[in-house]
Length: 108
Image (cartoon, rainbow, N blue to C red):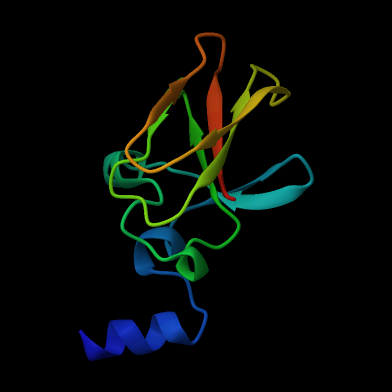
């Protein structure tokens, strides 16, 4: 456990984000939630500093803030990656957009 904490203090992202593929969205690169676990957890249970730039969740129309330690700006993206809507997500809340084809979670 001590090694994990030391790694996180050094600015290295947690293993669950570090192992994910990355994709360019809106001019920046984000980890892509490509596993069942990464889709379920998102950025939950991480400190703001550990979350990095955020997380792209393809095929997603709603997200929750359960287990979050900080607020998120949720970018709902259309089929071509274009922004449809941006919403602030607080802790223990749920937001959705029925037209979205992906969600970009960005620390607020």
